[in-house]
Length: 165
Image 1: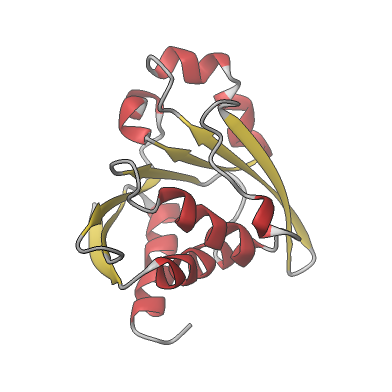
Image 2: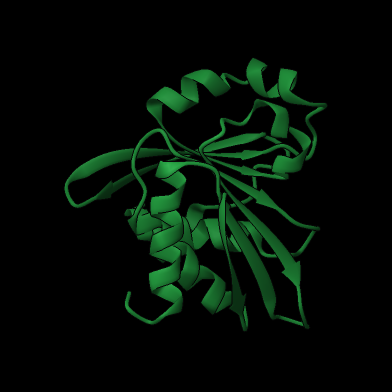
């Protein structure tokens, strides 16, 4: 497993990081977001949606009570469906399966907030991002790739960190 640590000075940088990630997405990828309440998980997803080409990323919000939000993205002429899952209220992988997780994997990208609650169901080739508050608005993001697809996403984040994106 390959990993990098990134630092964000505030919500704008977290969204910029998300945009770099979103621009690199292809169908079948899974992103696991882990961190406490207020760590910036949904902020990252807002940027990811913008980078993937979601027409109105302002509509991206945490699916805490509905459990799954879907966004249609069109980047570079290709359509991509983003499934934004909030696992906070789930009791485990069985609940995620009941939501149609396997079908989501075949239809697009799956981004799971509170992924530590359903880690047993996530595929090995998952990009895991652990967000931790570092200061009032600053965040530390530890990003780990579990396989070749997520390693490609990790490389996009690394390029962003180096200022090449």
